[in-house]
Structures are given as C-alpha cells and as structure tokens.
Length: 229
Image 1 (cartoon, rainbow, N blue to C red):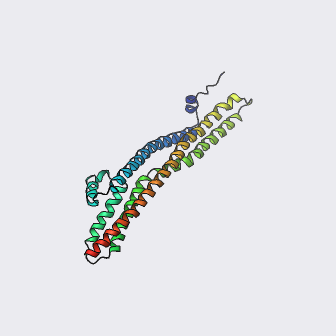
Image 2: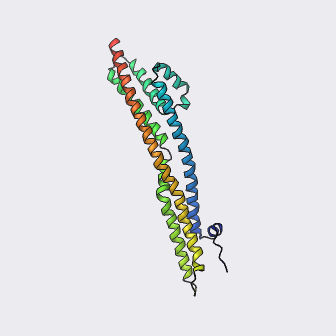
Image 3: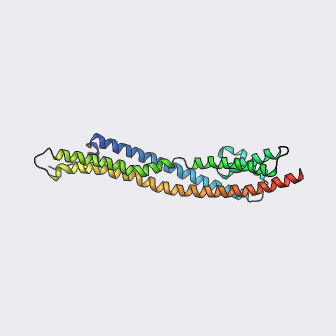
C-alpha cells in the first residue's frame, strides 16, 4: 500500500504537539511579514521627509516661516521637522526669558531636540525587536517540533514486529516540516531586521548631524540677540 506523503496530509495527521509548533511558527511568520511591510513604508517615508526638510532648511529661507509651515502640518511632521520644531520653539521661549545666558538658551534648545530625537528613534525602531526574536528563535522552535515528531516516530516503530521505511517515513517527514516552517519564518525576519537596523542607524546619524548643525545656528542667534538686548 502506498503512503500519502503530501504536505496537507502530513500536517493534518501530525501529532498535536507538532501541529501546535507549526501553528505558532505560521502565526509568527504572518506577523513578521506584516511588520516587515509596515517598517518598509515607515522608513521610506522617513527618508523622503528627511530629504525634503533638508532641502527646505538649507534653502536659505526664514526659519520662522519654516517653523510656521511645520506647525501647520504638525500631524504629518516626522524626523528632522519634529527635531527642528522642538528646538526652535524652546529657543524662542527661552530667549524671551529675562537675564538668561545665551549658552543656557542653546542648552535648553538642545535638550528639547534630544528628547524629540529619542522619540523619533523609538518610533523608527518599533517592531524591530520582534523581528529579531522571530529570526533567532524560530529555528529552535521548529527544531523542537522536529525532535518531538521523530521521537514519536521511533516510539511507534518500536511497537511493531517488522520495521519498514514506510512506517517511519510519515513521522519523520511531518517532523521535518516543522523545521522547514521555522526556517521560513526566521530567514525573512533576519534579513529584514538587519536591513532595517542599518536604515535606522543611517537616519539616526542624519538626525544627529542636523541637530548639531542647527545647534550652531541657534548658538549664533542666541549670542547675537544677547549682544543687542
């Protein structure tokens, strides 16, 4: 008699533990792909927003006008625009304070920008820990299902008088499917995680460079205002 070794038959007739492992891995894979597409859109938008804001910022226009434009689109503001808004608003507020040193104004603006930078990075890094977890643990979860399935196959083989490959093949095959699903879940998650971490790091460097450059501009304006006050 021939044995049905189709994928659907093997999964349907796998032991409950192996089926549970497969279900967890499939669910993890689906969630991972959802997060992969989400991070792709978020990081693409962040790169475009950074390019557009840098172009406007370094065009030589009035910073107050740029701030007004950013505030008008506050709901869509991300990255550098948020950092600029936080720094310039704090700079303008502190500058009107009586008897305050120019460096205190600059330091206050820098603190506000650092807080904004930290929040922006948290938003960009969202879901990345989950991708890292799936990428690192899925092969081991699949391996657990494989070990369990092979163990059951050999236990069943020990209860028969005449052992044949046809008896043990379905059990081993269904067990190996768990490993395959584990790798299917892990490989895209690892690739996406490494790629997105690199993108986030580059954006962080751009934001940090902008923060330092804008701090220099604020420092010049603070000293100029202090001399005329």
